[in-house]
Length: 146
Image (cartoon, rainbow, N blue to C red; front, side, top):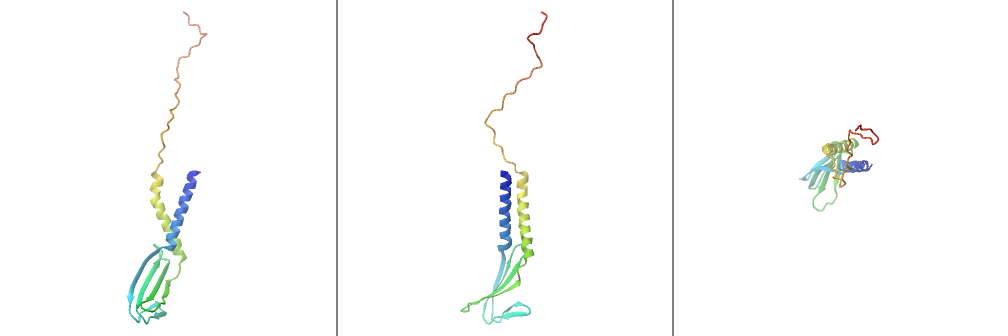
């Protein structure tokens, strides 16, 4: 029962780690400076910027991105930030990432669980002495015919 509890605890911990990596991991971000007149956003509704700033694209999730956000941060005295979700939250990609991370953890831990054997400590007590068996049986009342 103790091993079962330990196994369940390890699996739950790995599920929490896989869930965290699937949902909260920002996989990559790419940004660069843009001049005045830069336009970004959906093809049918693009926003044109009148100031210089920094444009960045952020992908969330690994290996399958579940959300992509484009952001424009103006430089200078302008403090507003514009962002556009190029790909809104995609739940199937989160499930795919979770399955990927759990499979990766299982693949790394499988050789350990297959080949690892706990070392038993040698016992300090001596084994009981075995009684010697003899094939001769002598009866005290037996007549030996002297």
